[in-house]
Structures are given as C-alpha cells and as structure tokens.
Image (cartoon, rainbow, N blue to C red):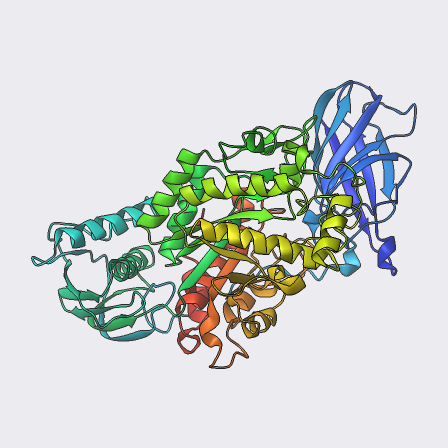
Length: 636
C-alpha cells in the first residue's frame, strides 16, 4: 500500500501555456490530511505562475512544494487532481515529469511512488534507440579501430599471448597490468596474457624504438610469434590493450572474431585529448564506480577524465580549509539547506570524496595513462557553496534578483566580495595538491546575464573597473582566477563561455566548446586551444531517438549513436589553425542518469563513438563495423 503521483503533459500551441495535469492518490489504509506534496521534475513551473486546485508554496529549480486545497482529507482509494498552469520548457520524453516525490505531515516525510510522465499520443513518433547488428569488414575486435591493418592470416579460437624470452621485467609488468584491466572489466572471460608459455599461444616480443610519435605502436604477427614495437610506455600499454581486445573478441564471439597470425597493425592516436566528463554533482557516483569508469576509459584508450566535482546540487570534494562544503553542500533532502532534486527526494541524498579517495582515483588513472582534470564550477553553479558559506553573499543584494537557466536564484559567486578570492585561493591550493593535472577546469558556464546587477558591491566594482555588463564582470573575475592558477603552476580550462565579455588570456588556456559545433572554429580563431564537445553530438545525456519513451534530455535535439559516431570535430577548420583543436570529449550530465541501468543505456555505445573519433582518422572509421563491435562493449 502506498502513495502515488502520476502526471500528464498537455502541450499548447502557445508554448508558454504548456501544463501538467497531476493526480495524487492515497492507497494506504489511513486518511491523509494536513499535508504538503513535494516533487522534482525537469519540466518546471514558470515563476509567477501557479497551481489550479492547490497552492504552490515554493519552487527551487526543479523542486516544487504544493499544498492541497484547505481542509482536503484524502481517504484511502481517493485522488487529488491538480494542474501546473505553465511550464518553463516543453516536455519531450517520459523522464521530464516528476522523478521523485514525498509528502510531509507534521514534519514526518513519506515517500511517494512516481510514474513516468504521460505524453500526448499524437506527438509520439514511437522511435526508440536503434543500433544495427552491423557487419565487420575484418575479423578483429578492436575499439577504437587501428589506423592501419594489413593482416593476411587469422586463426580461430582462444589464443593467448605470453612474453618471449627477450621480454624485460617492465614488459611483463605491463602485460600483467593490462591483463588485470581486462579481468576487472570481463571477470568471466579468459586472461589474455600469461607469463609462462601457453598452449596454442603466441610469444610476444617487445621492441622500443624512436620511430613512433604520440604514443603510437605497431604489432607484427608471424605465426606463433609477434612483436610489439613502441616508443613510450604508454604506447606499449595501448598495444597490449589492443591485443587484450583481440583475445576477448575471439573468445566472446568466435564466429565473428579471430586472432591475426600473419601481418601488421600500425596505430597512433589522432588527438592528444580523448576525454570524457562525468557529472557527480547531480548524481553521486561512489568511488568504486569512478574506478570502474576509468577502467572503461582505458579499454577505449581515452586519456582524459574531467571530473565535474561541484555544481548547484552538490559539492563533492573534501576541502580541509572549508569543511562546511561537504558537511552542508554535499547533501540534499527534506529539511536540509539544499532541497531534493533529480530523484531520491524523500531521503537525505548525496556524498563526497575524501582526499584519500581522490588520491586513489588519481593514482588509478595515472596507472592507466589517464589524466584526471578536476572541475570546480565557478562563478555560476554555486548554490551548494553559498548555502554552506552565506558570508560569500552581498547582504544588500535582493534575494532572487536573477535566476540561472536551471532555475537557481542568485547562484553565482560575487566577484566584488574579497572573501570570494580568499575562498578560491584556499580551494585551488588543495585542488592543485591533489591533482597533478596540467589543467584545472573552472567552469565559467551559464552565468545569467542579470547576475550581480542588483548587488551594490558588484555595481561599485563595475564602475571602478569600467565594466559595462555581467559578462565583462565575469571576464574580470576569471582573469583573476587565471592568475591565481598560474601561481600554482596550473593552466586554466573552462567551458566556451569563458571567452565572453572579453575573455581571458588565451595563452595557456583551454576551452571546451559545448553549445554548438561551430563554436569550435570560432574559439580557435580567437586564439584559444579547444576541445570539441558539442551537445548535439557528444552530450551523452541527450535522448537517442525522438520517441516519447526514449529517456534523455532534449535541448540539443536527438543524438543517435550513429550521429555521435559520424560527427567530425575538425569539419571546416583550415590547416593553419587545426593544430589548436586539441581533441574531443564526451560529456555525461546526470539530471536524468540516476542509476547504472540508465547510465549504461545512455552512455554506451556513444562513449566509444567519441573514443574512436579521438583516436581513428575519419577515413579509417566504419559505422557498420562499429555497430557490430558495440554489442561487446563493457558496461559500468
């Protein structure tokens, strides 16, 4: 017996009149009265709008708290119907409605079961994600696919590799490391390598040469022997990972994949930055999940993990100088300063990474040739910070004088408050000590254009520095942050909005172009080094089909696996500036990705599509081959 909330989306010709009809039902054995109902949903009520047959008590971003009509007593089996009059954005998929809900009676919280948002049948295309069976053009399991494959002979069945007599201890240690990686990802599969000669095996020799650039390698197969040539230890790891994939494919799908026994594979990554971002603020992923995610990145030979550690919904990094960041800013739920968002509404939800856990993650990444780039998102997306440390707020700035696109009021650090910089200096000092990455990502995205315009302190600073608007004030702020990071011997990275308002010093900075594909070229022409990560192709939280039942966000349209695979980051770039395109990056935002099942549906195989875009030259890619391989990719 339970409480239930169902919602139906009612689109309107005038999109400002889109609405929700909701039905709250009591299936317990007791009447319910004197209660309030709270829920969170990506389709939010318009500020200043309201509720028919109820009263909107408050709305914080996606969180809504509603009171029923005065005196309402909901008997067992009865329902209360009400309507949200206006929604800020149209609903496109079943996940846009209430994700979680709860009722509060005399301070006691009871969870409410939520159903998927019901959509209009005449607007549903019925299309769902489709990945074709695919067809391989050669019987090799490898992702990303190598640049050059010239193989004349193959052998079927399970064939393991073992070190030739000339292999060094370092070569054997590398084999053991990659064998352990394969075993963690596929614990029920055979080990790809053995140190002792294996029956029906191939003796693997190693040759370090100076002829390979950018961690490239080659493998020459010659019957029951093979030689892996490389210049760097990383290149050796990449070659061994390819061999581990070949063994895994031949074992897991012997009708499709085999092991080369005569020929050569020559390989080198296309880009130096082959990355994935993960948002752990909207949904907290425990350390063991982060470590497995790094294993998956290593399997796909990606080499950068952008760890999105802070946002409005939670601060996830232990900072010794500011303990309230995690004591207050890492948790949300009923009765807490941070209200429930994005599911798990009736409970205290959240978590953070201790500095010891961070060191473990960084070390694991380093062992797999992955750089961990921390992201501390400023000046916007700082609700969690400001709830933990309200002294960073201008006391004379009116409440809710501006709102972020996600609906948070006054969520940006104020550049005119001296304590802001004291705070950031301490935070970045600890971040730099934890993360040896060349770059620290500072966000810089989605600051509302009305931010700080009603802050007397900010207005005084703008007059003093002759700054005409919010974006120029943000640029002033970010230039100070850039100088702060330089003192720590770190370079600044940020989202593409860092270029707004006059931007920062392009020398030594790196921007991630996310809002639309053409921004990659624009930022490069402005002198920035750029990582290409457009929402329309590489945002893995985007829905993969138009149908109502397909989960995911929709602001950037639909991004099918084939769309992700076929997108070309360097399109339209002149040869003279192409060297400033540092690479590509997938982004995994977690407003909708709230458990492993949804993660696996949304992220795979598109993550590997981005990996292949970062590694394999366009002329060597093949969508049908990738589709065939995708059915054997690891999951979280």
